[in-house]
Amino acid sequence: MFTSVEEVQEALARESYISDRALALTIYLAHKLQKSLFLEGEAGVGKTDVAKVLANALSTRLIRLQCYEGLDANAALYEWNYAKQILHIRMEEGRERPRAELEKTIFSEEFLLRRPLLDAIHSGDHVAPVLLIDEIDRADEEFEAFLLEVLSDFQVTIPEIGTFRAKHYPFVVLTSNRTRDINDALKRRCLYHWIDYPSFEKEQMIVRKKVPDLPETLTEQICQFMQKLRNIDFYKKPGVAETLDWARALAVLGRQKLDGDSVEETMGCFLKYSEDLHRLREEKVETLLKGL
Image 1 (cartoon, rainbow, N blue to C red):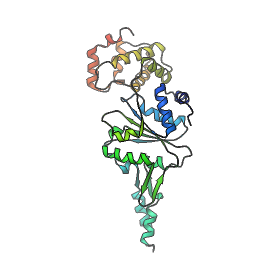
Image 2 (image 1 turned 90 degrees about the horizontal axis):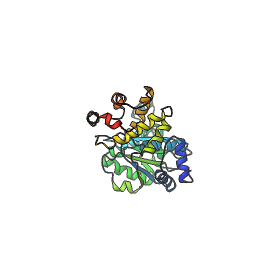
Image 3 (image 1 turned 180 degrees about the horizontal axis):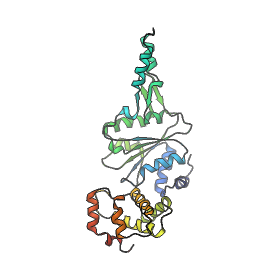
Image 4 (image 1 turned 120 degrees about the vertical axis):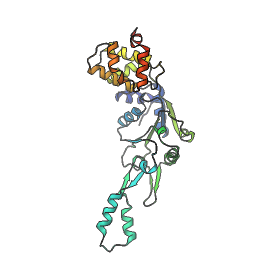
């Protein structure tokens, strides 16, 4: 259990996650109030990592539900193991067993495939797990409505078995890249926090922590260059994840400082669209490198 905002920051720092006080405060309140945490921001700014480091910090299990278009309740909650059920029925052939008894047997927990939501609700762990519902904006609105009901009561009823209730409420973290608006009803049940691109100082601290072998001069140049890039109107601006990929790539190549050739050769580490690569060349790399 976290006892203070400072303890949250320290716990995240031990897991190599650099957090500002605003994020730590929101996490602390969500934990104390048993509310879901809704994290929104551009891709690559560290939303998903919050759930991962929280699971490590709390010494508990991370259960991840990756959202996508067409995701339905069966894929998120539970399914029956039909292959195992059919095999069991065939093994019972020839035995004089009442049909009702056989049906009761095959529709039991032994044949139940727990998906992330049911796994989090009916967890047998002594410590409540962290449930990550990642990129909720990729799912359909119908799934949002279903999720709203599940997260409100933390229970689910399976007609053939009964109702499963959470003994320990999981720490729920929802993330969104804001590709579409999320239902207000879902947001109202969460504590909200927007994770923005980091400042130069914060990004520098992150790179130092994650890529400690990188020369200090190169670390500073990379972070300054990324700050300049985010002022350009790219189709997809690079996030912290791209900064770290680029830093690791330059470390592997043995670079000691940033120059035009290094940027040209490795720009695919931080830009992922051909239009953005072309735009960077139009901006002239050498001009962006001036003053670093």
